[in-house]
Image (cartoon, rainbow, N blue to C red):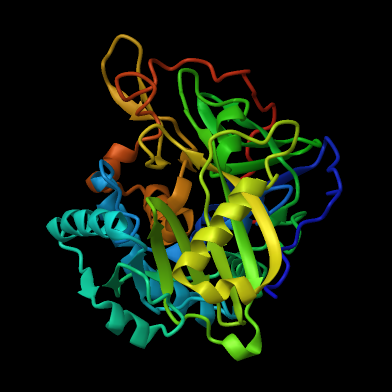
Length: 448
């Protein structure tokens, strides 16, 4: 089984007087937050990662498909450039992680097969292929015989198969564990270990609010007391970003939870390998995917619902969802009925109205001048919805560029203020629930 993600059940509360100091504070310990934190460290800065349950949110349930081609949806073509850019970063990202001393992150360059169950599914997949080809993507039809030669356990009754060589996979649980490993490594004298943080980088608390001083964000107030003071703060805590106190006045982060049920199953020895490629299927108009892992397990997912189950938590699994996933997976690969069901998981993914992430600095207009600047000390990186694992390297690289004072016009449409009216926060307003710090940053301690 994948290594467990460190997540103390009861984080030790800090004293109200405790103040940690770092160059950068990253709020949120999912794949996105960890990837950003590692890129910050690789830039030579000290970093703290703030999360009371790191790696146990949407990242824990994610299947880890790196699928810019398969994930191209109608009316989401604007996302394609970012997805392709991030897909191109993945080989070096995985290789650098291994060189840094991490274990196996489960990164595989095996291809993806798109499979249709009936004639209507074939038409839908071929229509989508036309959109994909118009965008310059490679999607090649296979005969059913060719598909079953590659994957012998596919049903002989499938209607079509398409080869998508550019869509790969990674194991998100292993990935987060690997990122934690490398973040815990500190070269002697490098100044990257933050005094007071677990393993020199982790703060096992929930972020309660942003800290402000003289019109700029200077860090984070922690839920159990204490603060993290930083030159730059990156808000990457998914759905919780919108409820963070101290956000700039007028900033609207319209995040909605989209729940997904996902299953993990063990393949008996006589059926291994069940598949060598990821299978993304369409079964009577309903999508389903089967992702094979190297450890003899497969991941089957994922349903999509926008309401939590009544009277239960965000992690509650839908019985109907489990039935649907097993039923549809068996239509494509009948041997799924012989697998051992190990785990049923559900998590809420943070989605935006246009399904694109909220990524960048927050614009702000000076009252009465028309001059637009940015809120100092603050970057937002949330709302990644289905694409968090795929987009992690790109999000990390974009955040590093912003920290270095560089902007790329290609990503301007991802502004975190694009739903706040006129694409900017109206005026230098006080932050929501004004949070200020009475203690200035200590330059001598920021890299401790």
